[in-house]
Image 1 (tube, one colour):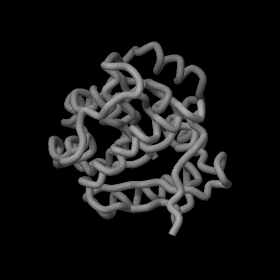
Image 2: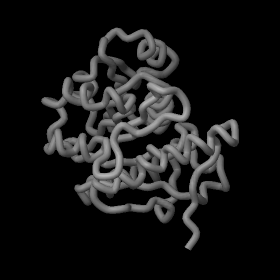
Image 3: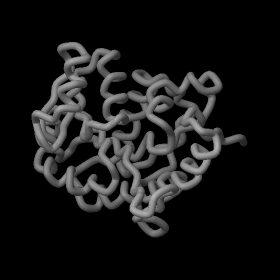
Length: 217
């Protein structure tokens, strides 16, 4: 499958590399098609890795991962929107505001979220919120914690899109399907994004990001 990654940070790098190892073709998109971070990532991977602009990655990918900083997500997707209609966008971003230092606050919360803002602004996109409540190392290898016996939350308006994302998460990242909790439509991104203030405080207490949430019933 051809997959587009929006963003050149550690999250996009980690997800892109994991997908390459599973045999996918991956293009990393950035503001500048010749971005140095993207070029370094391509150089360290095989011929299935490529780079381009955000627009190039949107054209290339059958599925798109939004791995940009939340404050830039709308702007980035706007630049690529003409080539995203009908595609699945897995939104990994969070509306974190670091302007006052650590811990950050949320610049969208309570009666809205970044995930649903993206969906509302780009109605032709099939937005699936996922992977935004844990570190990128755990995203792509859940077995590093408790043999993978912990939970991942997703939400989105398109049922078929969510089924495809769940299949990808299982096949390529090793998530047990029974541990993926579908919360419903995209408004439920309000809940998953509001986990971040707690997640960050736990990170500050533990001193590392190798943890996740497990729902006991």
